[in-house]
Image 1 (cartoon, one colour):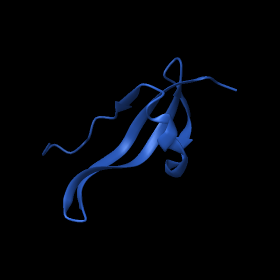
Image 2 (tube, one colour):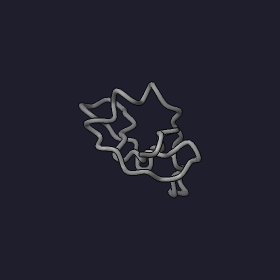
Image 3 (cartoon, one colour):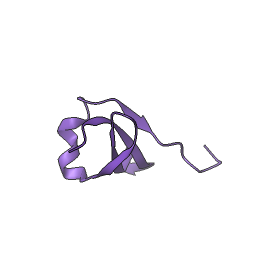
Length: 65
């Protein structure tokens, strides 16, 4: 089993939720200590791990940002 090194937020967007501005994360990738892909995390299971590992955000492809 590979050792988890970090998390990468792969899909995220700005949305209004209940009238309030939020950044909504919809996909998180689990990476090993060398930065190589292990798997995509189930969002309902990843919350407790967000504070335990370094997190990066994949650069958005939208040119308007």
